[in-house]
Length: 241
Image (cartoon, rainbow, N blue to C red):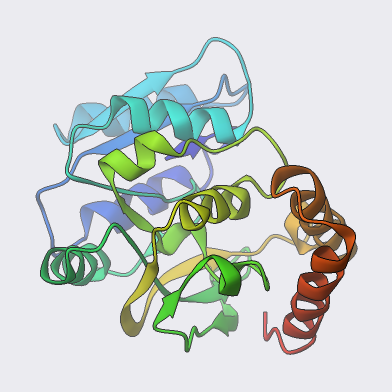
């Protein structure tokens, strides 16, 4: 769980992890050299439950680096991701771990609600595809980071790149390597908090980042980039977020 100036939301987010019906987990809070009370809050939370570990970074290097540090410290069989202002519903881990074990999957995801700063639902991302390969992923990022679970070897092999849309770029790298992502449950299992001031709320900026990933990260030629960008644009039109 990367955290930067996250003191306001961190306790509730951590509580959503502690409330999981699946109890055999470790929670890593990675403080990316915050300037607010995140360190104090994180240390208090870690002191309250032995499953929580707090790591403070002396140099702010961004969310991708913080996630990679978390993966490097992880000891479990699976790695799941949650940002410091989002929430998991109580049976998220239980259902997803069971799916991963039963299907021997390396990569899974699920649907999620979108909520505002006050926790009021303002939309949802209901994913209908029960599996996504590299070709399908290039059509747009359907996978919410807060819903992803990877086996630890896959998470270690494919670190988050230090670019915009680092999660999407990471999923593409994993899929390009031949790993299929599977829908772990048809239920909504998480809540993504959409801030009015969030950069990811800017559709134009997101489109520019996606184009950059096609051209510079995936090294697609102009024709393939245009083909997939058309699919991305059509998906954006029907996006209910």
